[in-house]
Amino acid sequence: MDYQLALIPGRSCGDCTICCTVMAIDRPDIQKEAGVTCRHCTKEGCAIYATRPSLCRDYHCGWRQLAILDEGWRPDRSGVFVELELHEGQTAISLVLVGNPLKTVRQSWFIDFVATGVKGNLPLMLGIPGPPGHQGASLMLNTNAMLRAAATSRAAVKAELESELKLLRDYGFPPRVIRHIGHNMGP
Ligand code: SF4
Ligand code: SF4
Image 1 (tube, rainbow, N blue to C red):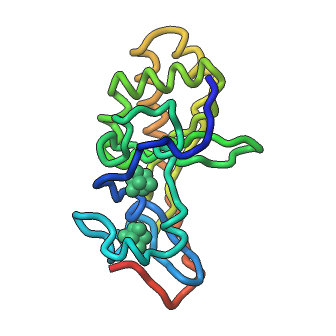
Image 2 (image 1 turned 135 degrees about the vertical axis):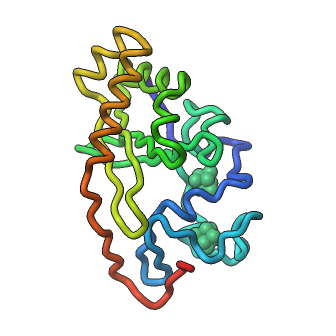
């Protein structure tokens, strides 16, 4: 399975503001803890959209860049925030479960994406956010066990995903220390 990185023409964030909550921001001109919604985030979107920091202006999640993800993968609708992560020298597609994780890993569209990706050597990770102010947890999905499950059945992939999710939930989420101060965008 192959993929290209470029903004998908015609695809926009719409009402989605998931990255304004999920991500930690630690820059000299803007700081916010992970899992804490930026104070400028409203139901209608960013209240300072025209003058938002360059970091926000330049950021696009994986769904904005990956044509292999269809419209249904918009993070606020799918419950999956897709990040592109450097892992052991390659760019992996990290599927961060920001909705109801157990429900998501039981969905056929999610299971089929993972099975097809793993069989096609697409570097895939599964992640969950930590509590507010803490790091999240993630692991690679390209394991021998997942490959065997993908070659067996949808039920086998679902069981493997559920067991990976259990491992993630047992992780001891360390605090994420914000180094910069002075421009806190938290509440
Ligand atoms: S998570 Fe993606 S789609 Fe949602 S607001 Fe951020 S960049 Fe846009
Ligand atoms: S300033 Fe940035 S993080 Fe805050 S709501 Fe606007 S786009 Fe989101």
